[in-house]
Image 1 (cartoon, helix red, strand yellow):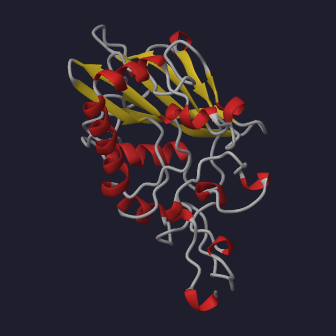
Image 2: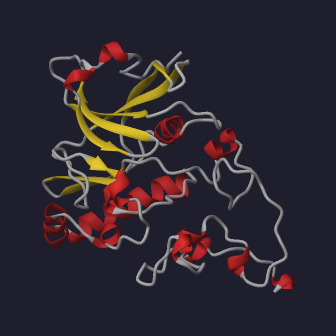
Amino acid sequence: PPPQHWVVRDASHLQDESAWTPLGRGKRKEAFSAQLRRSDSRPVIVKRAKHTSTRGPSVVYEEVLYLEYLRGHTGIPFLLGGFSENMTTTSNRASSRVVYVVRSLDGGFAPGPFLNGHAMLDLHKMSAITHQQRFYAMSKEFTRLARHLPLELALAILECFRSFSEVGGFFLQDLAPSQFQVAVSGRTVSFELIDGPPAMEGEVARLLGVNSSHGVSGEALHPVPTCLAHTDCPATKSYHCCCATGEADGCGAKTPIGAPEARGHCDVRQL
């Protein structure tokens, strides 16, 4: 059964799906703006898996764990609840998928130009890692906020990253402005990571069976090969550190340097 503190426990607590507004659609999940059936309800964000999972827990289920485990921490969206809904697969088999609901920030907007409350986000159009605008383009609202309240914004960003990385043990693989939502009230700035990152260590990682302190969540532990350089055995994925060569690895000539801690752990005796 769902936790008692969840406000949303089944589809009846939400307005009819026909009234939902699409916010985004990726390869594995989709997001909508909606409202609860209560008349005084504020806007909420609904996320659900596009397909059923055939390889362990779905990415949406893992996001629910991220939200519930870090409930109450700064920079983490407030989880209102979730449920499982029935669906029919492409092979006409009955199955189910996870749906969850979080509170939408009052007056919230995205730091980047790809996501807002009025336009549809299509991740298929921005999936290339080498697309430079994905890394640095900021929305006009975010730019104004950074100029007006730089210290407050910087502290909100640091607190958000501390919550999901240091406290939660999660690793954000696809860092981009579109992954966050910002809101401001007076001189108080809220900065939230709206896309749940994979668990890399800690309680949630152990629950999901992540068996390497620097491995990719959900993947099996592979033996460390004989290597001549750190790039021969990357800690996570090559495009995280942009330390491999070639466009196929997701890092072009003008892509940011990436995360140095993801470069690899080649044993010095094997160098």
